[in-house]
Image (cartoon, rainbow, N blue to C red; front, side, top):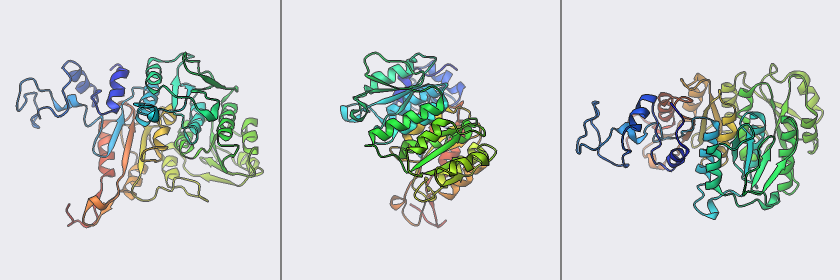
Length: 407
């Protein structure tokens, strides 16, 4: 199936129909006139015959449950570029000056490491969502998003509206600022320099170090960087790039958090970094396990510490590393919450299912007095299936603590 046109994708984020479900239902819907929401209901027994008028269309044409369920919302992007555009417009609806971003960052979609580091710029004070370019060009989805977002210019970034990282191109009509540097480690340092300068010269008290060769272990860092401004720096095998050391040295013995086991970031790296500040590891041998461990993690005020009900969550397949950066603004706004990874999107991994059961909301007598969880699902049904989305929805649902309780 070809990608959903951007105009429909963006409309979907405002709860208009964009398509959804499996390929068969979308192909069927594409051949019919899109229905108005709230149109005549259909028989649940199957078949296309309406209960009321002969012009009604099947419920599948409404794009539910793929577009949204009672506890989930899907950003139905066919790839990270379209997903980033959709997320940016969900976070910044851009219907007035007050709902526009001051700036956006632009990173090449193939530079997933630089994109993950650029999520830091979504934190305060810049609040710049990540958009993606491709091979030195601005894709149609990104261009359309920029035309809708119309960033106003960030005073703390020299009035720049476009923060260009790495190979990202210029965009006509937007005042740009280039973040120089060759290679992801240096680009991460330059991103951190800009964030620190915009924050009044006050660097963060902690840094994240991710393994450059393990995208699955690095992805979970993007959402936390967007929420807190903590930089995502890089190790490379048994080496610590000079740019990473330089970024850490701008702080006075910061707390250094390593993402992953010694097989990803060796003990030699840990010992070298320990000269610069106290080092801790966020555990997890796989991206899925680490994303859950990071969601639970807390140390000296660092970490999500999401160990009770009442949170937002972002779900993504670890097969698309750049999606972590695309989704990061959702971790830094709205229901604020960690990124949880799925191994391939066709099943809900045991670690994620167990975690969601642990933090599932409950109520004693009246659910109106309870707290709620919500999930954002990244990508179309080829990234995370509708069956998996439905299971996530069930695990996010508030449940009676007393089996005899009723609303």
